[in-house]
Image (cartoon, rainbow, N blue to C red; front, side, top):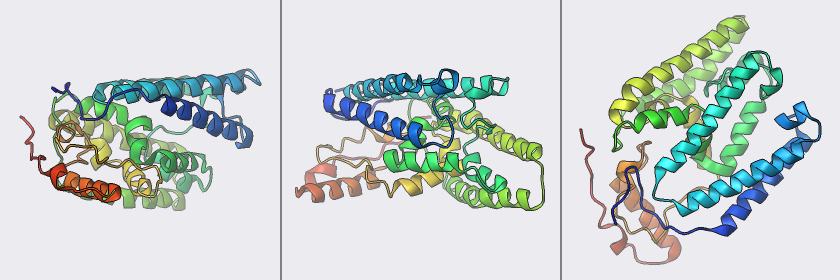
Length: 307
């Protein structure tokens, strides 16, 4: 079978139970958030008290439909990118409207610079308001590192930039050290800004500058390498998602049904897959299924990116 551009191997077929589960889980989580949040968390309730229940129903139905569509089109990663970009467009449109004066559209009711690193740095600088870190951690517990590939409002644009090349490339090892350094420097910088009495406007400008550098990296490196330079080599929150995601009980794993064709390798924009990694994953999958691994991974071969 010939894969579509940007496709990965996988098993097709709709899974109705998955759509129902997504609907139910979304409804439960949003209901708990509506009842327990210290402020009015649902936008519909801010404009019309009581309308939040209708918003919960609509968002739950949307979650169920997305899961059904994604489970029936596992070979086409472009569909996920469209959903991801759609979410990002809505997010930034809501932010811009909130900044323009409709304060009900701001997520927490106060201005939050929409740069992922601010999720880490913001509460340290302010000395409080931990809503965004709590939201991030709870989401990572449920979705694992999939936060970065489905929910990050910056990541969709990095994915779009990387898709300028048909086949995924890889970043140099130095990018890994850069992200580790920024992961350590971000909370330290926030603490220093707070300790030295730097004002909120200057701190916000620093956050905007950090985000602008990330956008420049997407334009220069992601488009040329076919790899997501911002997400995998620059964003400190992305590294936090990877580390915390390892604790999630819902981590995605290779199935023993994988035949080791290797088509996922040139499709992954995160550089997370390579032949050696897949061999290890398949051996572990076969051990979990108590089957023999020999025939599972011998077909994997190194594929060099074009260009």
